[in-house]
Figure 1 (cartoon, rainbow, N blue to C red):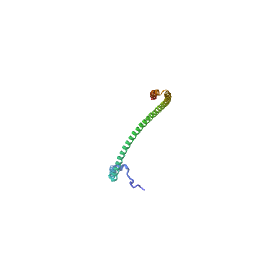
Figure 2: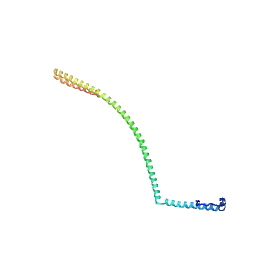
Figure 3: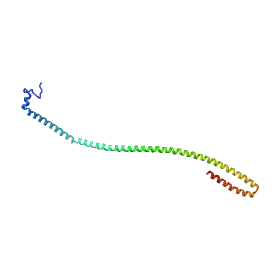
Figure 4: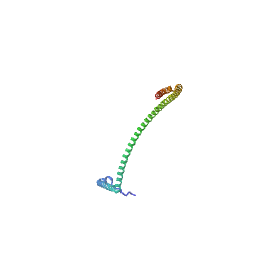
Length: 182
């Protein structure tokens, strides 16, 4: 079966082109050009109709809204990241301060323990001195009592004078011991 679009030509091709070549060529190019222009025009009209349709406009509005929301979210994210970095830097500073304060506190505790030990030693020493002084006061009272009894036996009148004389001595002795303890 022979192709539909063309027939066998009994003339050589050169002769055909020479006779009607220019006319055919211009006609074919013209038809093809017109056909391309019509197809492009139809496609352009179709595209314009689709582009201006309600759904397309809604889509464009949705895209713009998404871009706006995306921009706002990006700004919020950037601000949150900035805040996070600031908080992180502040946390590092706080941690360093806490570490320094803990070291200072440990040093203060050690110094406080040392001071407490020194004070406990002083208190122990002062307690021994107080016990010694109390024992001395008690001994002196007993001696004073013994002397008062002896003097009372010898002379009742002179015992009152010596008793009065012994009491200031005892008072001076107690004040002196109290001053030593302080």
